[in-house]
Length: 475
Image 1 (spheres, rainbow, N blue to C red):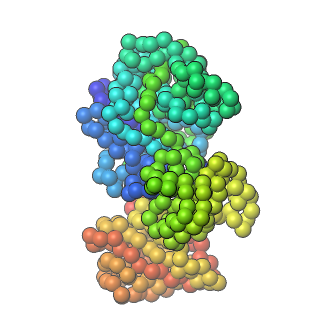
Image 2 (tube, helix red, strand yellow):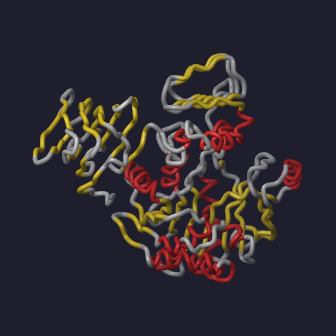
Image 3 (spheres, one colour):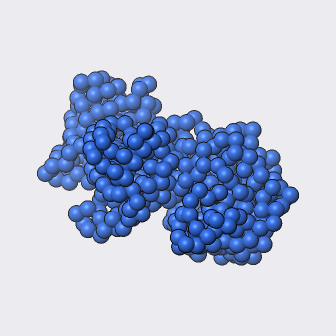
């Protein structure tokens, strides 16, 4: 049994409330909004104290597996495991699977800290005081949740009412309350003793699994079998699809926390946001004298209390109040900050139309385990891309049935395999890959390799790739 805490990070969500930067294939936890780190990376850093924590277990889905691995590698943070969910089954199944793995690997007496990967938290002394209170409560056999001290009568969060004080410093949970109407939220805020339900937990593994046996046996059975029958693949553990699919689709709150008599809440006055809307991004950002949060590559004039962000073109905003202006590489959103909750409805509208559905799914820039690519221009029978390859990485040995490719190196050094020939290309040098020829691209250097790829042919889809050898286990 480990004496340290085992962090379990939930990183499988596909929310699109922060569109156009967030997409189904690029959710908010993996995006750099303002600053150099993503929300997922900030979560990893909060559990990086080796004196307190074991390496983290990350639960995500197949689509995000290489994003998780690469963003951990960027921080030089080792992970204990990356669990891959074959389909979404809500938080109860994910927690149960993690609990089964933690018990098998670390022992029944272990405590696990369950964290969302997409929350912004000021990890100051107040935060770690709350963590230690939660550890003490969990060590006493309680299933602990973190209750954020409300700063406003928010209607987008569930609430927890605290009860009697426990020796650990936590409170017994009196009741859970669904997302309330504004009048009820104002009443709870005025009376005190109510907390936002943060979705973060501290669980003693044995007690968690025992309570799941009582209150959610179908979830525990399915998740336990999914772990037992899981397959190790490179650095990942693929949960068994058939077993995991038998789990009910239910949250850990509904499945266990609202039913158990052993729930406790730690009052947590640290700064916290689930960043569920552009309004919350503005509230958590560093505002200038006019109340604006403006990212790099923007010019803001005669504008107040607004959020201006771009991941592409330069944005110039003039004469606006209480506005969100958000530009990705291929789409722009403009709306009042107070209407930020409506973005989800807009995304559903876009997704329902063939002409705009792709805007909700992927970005022009896609990330791969070796680096990634940006689609620059699509034409009739040709496409232009920017390819970037991380130092030491290589693409699969592959061929295409319907396209040929021209590569021009613009930065770094490329090792190019074409058939039986291997050659080195440096900046301003180019090569032609004939249709049907087996080829491979690698970066043997110490800096990022960048090249421009021009594809020509009758079909240019990403599924026209026949992988012959792939070090990442892709077909």
